[in-house]
Length: 274
DNA sequence: ATGACTCACATAGTGAGA
Image (cartoon, rainbow, N blue to C red):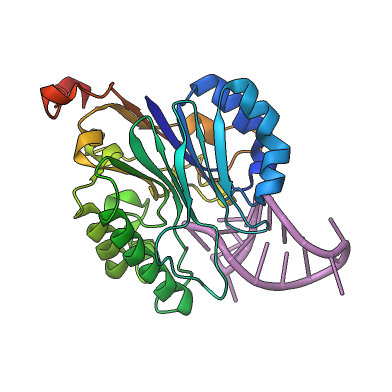
């Protein structure tokens, strides 16, 4: 089963590239963020094309900002928009949707940006992450948290750590909030697969940042043990950031081996597959 | 270089992104 997560920065603007990418990469489950479309507009734009490609879908959007969606060819059951006690910022924001796909509880998440440390929006980001942690703790054991977490887990996940001091995405409280999620028993599967590589998922549109590979790794897949143990491949699809009209984020791709028979117990892939 | 880009929206400048 191939799971992908992609902040598309407007599903409407990205529609041609998104549909071509679905045909090219053939993911079984897709988590989208920053769709910037209402649910009605998302369906108008994609229902026929996604049906032709074999995907069921569910979206949670609000229009101008935010918006998340799930596409699946392996089942899309018990869809939940938002999560228990999800904080609001002035009004409710469309930043989370989850469903059970192929036996895994898959979450498509667009974590608040935070804007400036110690701002109202920053405190909202931390409260949002804490509530997410509690909701995931109360949910199914086999889970994959996928999306734009808007946190660089370590200094190795930004192109120039010194340039980020005092800015959001790298502050200790944000990293502690991510740590509280990982403490649920989750694994950052791309970093586990590439422990020492310079691997980014976001590059600013300006100043040739992608060309210079001056990016950040803020789009993550956090998998519970039963899911992480099935990871056959994990990578970032840099090709999708190239060319004309890209998102500023690249998709994160994770391939899972088939779920083992329950009698076999947890499956641990050989080192060569990790 | 105090910049640079892209998106949505009361389609012209703003707010937001990270």
